[in-house]
Length: 442
Ligand SMILES: Cc1cc2nc3c(=O)[nH]c(=O)nc-3n(C[C@H](O)[C@H](O)[C@H](O)COP(=O)(O)OP(=O)(O)OC[C@H]3O[C@@H](n4cnc5c(N)ncnc54)[C@H](O)[C@@H]3O)c2cc1C
Image (cartoon, rainbow, N blue to C red; front, side, top):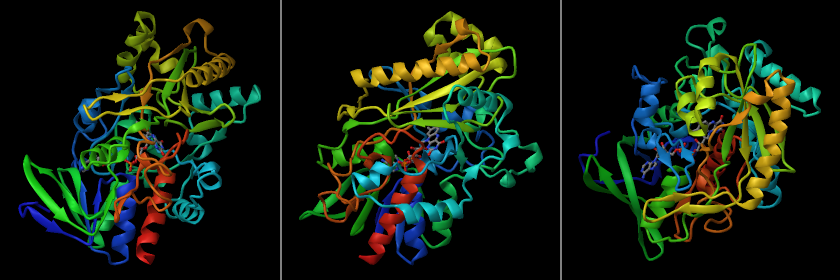
């Protein structure tokens, strides 16, 4: 839909089409609500470059070169479907503390999603030889690694299950169709009657006497505004905080979480993990606050990351196909934040460093047990794929995800009250379905 009419109205405006926005738009439109979905990015799914290195440059914020002031590289896709266009397709149940400590129940919604999307681990023969070797080495050391449930269904692969050849590069965008993407639920929302406008950047929400009345922003450089009595911000961990700041809610973006991520690599004489689907085996350590999984940078991205660690790690590129990779995802403390001057800060706290050190030692042991040469093991620079916790439940949002402005809700990774320390998407979908139910019943 073109925004050539600069004034639009709807019953409900949803901003952003990642898993948060796509879920609420789909659920509300299914029940006959008049929904307008505004998305900053475009739909790249059927473009020749989708799922390639060129694509990742084209649709990631700042061409994949978005860095915090501390040098952490944030990957934030700006496109239809949000970050599910580049995710590793892992599904994790919401953490118990979300219900027990914050009273946020999504059990029913999550169960329903698992059934709907047929979420389960990849069959044994598709989990990857090297990844399975890592998991077995970890198990031999007493760490109970499990096959990671996935939003990937090999039966959906365009060719057929036999030619299912997902590798680390599937994180550039899924080319075979096996991986679920939130854009599919946007398609459903549109089929249900929702109106979708792409290339629309919402800047702020409009309010009158404590009640939301709409949003304003730009579309192809032109100003536009749209009115609604209910607005749901789902512009992601960075986007929603920025919109709220522009709207005068200055507590937004003060502190954030990232599930700071890093891979530990080691070279072997055998096959490596790079040509295998990402994150097929995982292990959670809730006591120390980190998660481990099998993961490798795609071939061309590996040297770009490794060079920041020195020439030795970069030269291991020549052995990429024989490298093993274990990812650490850290439950980082709330720190730094999204600043009104445009900067993002995410300093590691002393406790973050301490727990990271612990995780690194465990990874080293596992890699050595799996056949990696001790002298080849190194840690790549930090990345952030889960910008989150910037508009937290309990601080800025009530249990129903409503802000202090009546009718203004937030439903995306920014609402997490603490770092989730696990794949986020299933939790976000659960929250989206729960919010849709609340709004319908209201
Ligand atoms: C490489 C990578 C791997 C990952 N792997 C996994 C995984 O395996 N499993 C998992 O569960 N999670 C994974 N994640 C994380 C997960 O994808 C994100 O946490 C999740 O998609 C966040 O959802 P969201 O709805 O909060 O926001 P997003 O998915 O970020 O969507 C926000 C949307 O809002 C749009 N937007 C932003 N600003 C505006 C604005 N001003 N106006 C209009 N629209 C706007 C954006 O274009 C985007 O489409 C991964 C992420 C990355 C980058």
